[in-house]
Image (cartoon, rainbow, N blue to C red; front, side):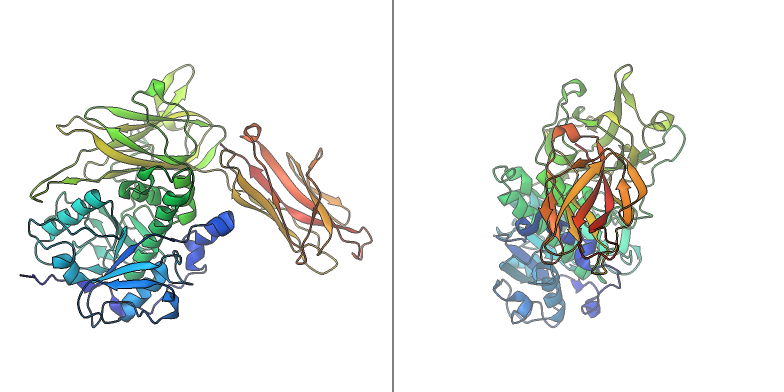
Length: 583
């Protein structure tokens, strides 16, 4: 017999609302930057099958006649499909042709939430395992308590491990503590909140396995959690396509594992002003925290550009001892196998100070086939300094004062199935990352670890010379100044159309009068090859990177012909950009 499960839409009345942000959703989620960096090769979600689950509030399917869904195939897995505005807007935000992060998706299966929880997928609280499905990612923009939520949560966590499924689940709207368990209280999924913080948050409920785990894990910029959740699901969709198509990842099935995608999304999230996981800021425990996430914002705001950057860094091996760890790239991930009472290690050579370092470890719980029990080990995460004279030394307490300016270098939660390091101002040198597992009675366990040691953001400075056309030429940097990836370019706009010019660089800033404008770079300078501005006065200058540039700082400016300039010099000059190259 089918049981009726309490399932209600997360503020369905808000389905037409959008947040009042100064930037677009595409800008805030990093999609604009991702497209800018990768151009036509940016992922769109193509080839990734999705599963949309909706509460039936007078309807539960997207309106398939909406132009946003042209070219997409929907399969309705529950009886009596009826469109709803809520489901339509969720779909627009997840896979819509013009308003989503993953417009390349063409295959969507849809369920009514009550049917999905019963014989449509989960099979209720019975001993029957969840059904096999062909989708890769489930979006759940609904909340519920229902009958037997603990058993239902165990079953969906089981399905994650058994089928490699990724779950994105909204928490309830409105500030305050968590109030309902479905499906935000999953161990093996992502609970999603809003960038404005107007959602339920805090520790998981006492009646649910391992109470006190921090939720949500990530947020996104929409006016209701129903619609921030498909933005995160869209980010996961882009990563899965990347895992399947990027040559460095396509032969590695680990790249699209749920724990890896979860870790990468959280490690790549943008920590905005005010974010904190509450580490000690002074004394013997400075830099240590037992709460890996922010109490309201989790890992904070979705950034698909940085998440893609981390995933594309490819899987890096872990070492079983500190002495055998080899230097890893500054963006990457690992699927490591931990054992009781042991540690795993990664080494990092930091060539110059890093403004931001983010590391996140995530692991799943294992649920028994009868769903009556589950197991999961604990792990800790810590960053160590390595000096030639003193060897491996702690960064916790006063010993870390010379080496990082803020944040945490140790994460030691005893309840969460993730640990997170977020630190600022890491000085140059050699470091070791340790994933440490206390002694227990369990066997080997998969742990996904993802990291990014960010390059210094390029700095635009100085003022360009107004052209004969009345425009101020602009020089900007695009991509990451990362030598190992070699995806970096300079772009000029507002120059004089169809005229030649040249990028030149030096190693120091300047502010000296020059040919009616400003020379923003000190001599001596190095000239790059001559280029020609297009009909719009723009040009892109790819900048090949090589290992000799690691740690170097260069100041770039653009000189171009402007024969009609009224000052008679015949010269145009852009502003300047300072770039520090990293490994």
